[in-house]
Image (tube, rainbow, N blue to C red; front, side):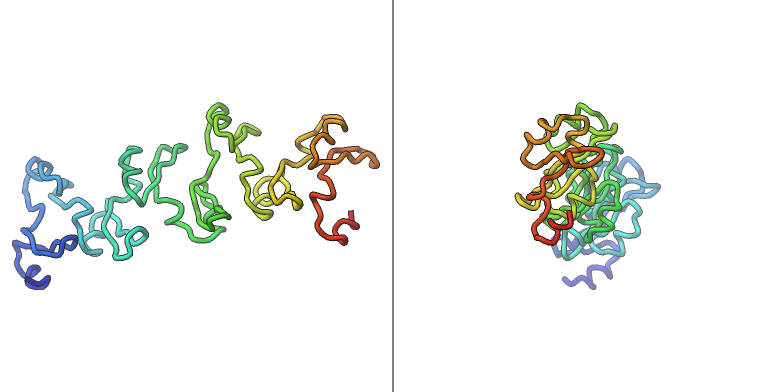
Length: 239
């Protein structure tokens, strides 16, 4: 039997998942009979569950479904993430992620954005410079206790933010957090010395080998040491 021959029979339809002809699904005329069949759902009429729509046209006719080519190169019909109302239903769908801040389900960041700017412009996402992919934003907890329970985060100015060492390169280190600076000597992101030791003594400042105390100015301050800040003689001599 071919797809065309199957489609020509009004009592039949093609099962695109298993590639054979089957009796037409979800032809029930009552709510009770429809809901009794796990392949079906009732929405003023009996309809197939998203996963049983084998072609994009049928899938897109149902507003609760979407055609997924992100996780399946051939495409498949799945439930839209934003209609899933529980954490389990959301995370069981490979296309979706649960947002703890909004208590809502949405498409995973990596399937939504493929470049840096739109990823970082999305309040739920951030660009991962190590993997060069868009992922869910970290350190987005809404309370101090849950924030500080994660040792990669810190609570600052009444919000949860990533600690400086979580930024993997100079660009992300100095772009996303003004309290962080790049250590060119050791190749990592560190807390800005002036911010870290504000109001502290020179002795406290210089205990950190990343920092130096600059006393030859009107307003002495703790600052990043020259050896960790500069890599060339020209840069160094300009300071």
